[in-house]
Length: 160
Image 1 (cartoon, rainbow, N blue to C red):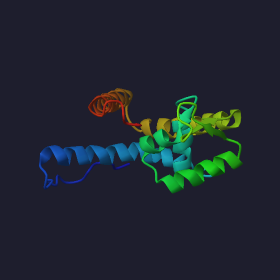
Image 2 (tube, rainbow, N blue to C red):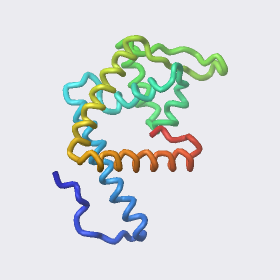
Image 3 (spheres, rainbow, N blue to C red):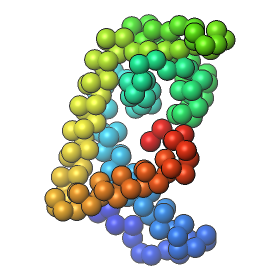
C-alpha cells in the first residue's frame, strides 16, 4: 500500500493549499475504500449517500436535501422516484409550505440504510486496519478536528 503523495510539488497557490490538497488525496484513499463496499449492491454510491442522508432525520424536505448534498434536481428526482418505486421512501407535502415536498424512509428504507452502514463500516475498518492502532486514533482525531472546523466555518451547512 503506497499512499504517499510522492515528491513534494509546490502548489501554485502556496504551501498551505498544497498541503490541503495532499490531505484531500489521503482522505480520498480512506473514503475510496467505502466505494468498494458497493460492489454487488442494489444501489449506486450516489443513491447510497442519499439514503444515508435521509436516515439522518425522520422527515427531510426535498429542497433541503438537494441543498445539503448538492445534487442536480433532475437526478435527485429520478433517484427519489426509484426509491419510491422500491418502497424505500414515502413522499408528502410539507405541512409548513404546501409547495415543498418532504421525504421519509420507510421501514424498508431504514433496513437498506442499516445494510449500507454495515458495509461502509466494514470497508472503512479494513482501510484503517492497514495502520498501527496509534496512527488510527490520530487519523480519526484529525478527521474529527477537520470536520468540526468545517462545520463551524459553514455554520452547520455542511453534510459531511
